[in-house]
Image (cartoon, rainbow, N blue to C red; front, side):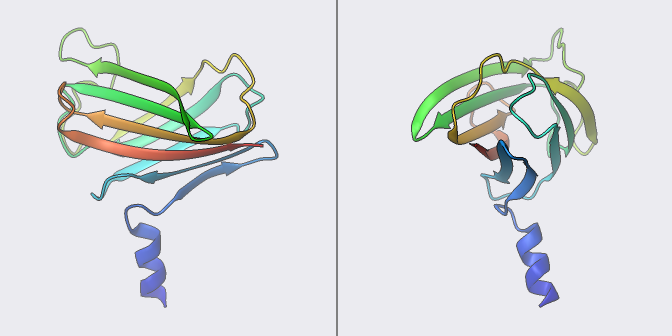
Length: 150
């Protein structure tokens, strides 16, 4: 029985519950099949505040000399947002994770800003993919967030 529980808890694709409150539920899964050393947390668990405090711990499987993030948000089945941004290019990078080496632990706290209007109630599906190349062939990480605004 313990072996089955251990398998369920640590198998890629198993949901990581982030938080629940009267107005919000938030969880994520990995959308690729590789093992990750990754932990993400947000506080407060509410859509009332315009700033979330986030904590990230990640051990990347490759050097982060180049990193492109692709962010897609779907709301009730329709695409609501598509954003892609090169975060690390190897020259004049503004983020402290740029230049980290394979196997180094990234442990950062940061603010998530930008919630300027109330979110409509409903189900949100958020896919965050990180690539180590500009052509988006070498995926470094893929997360599938589920957000339910009540």
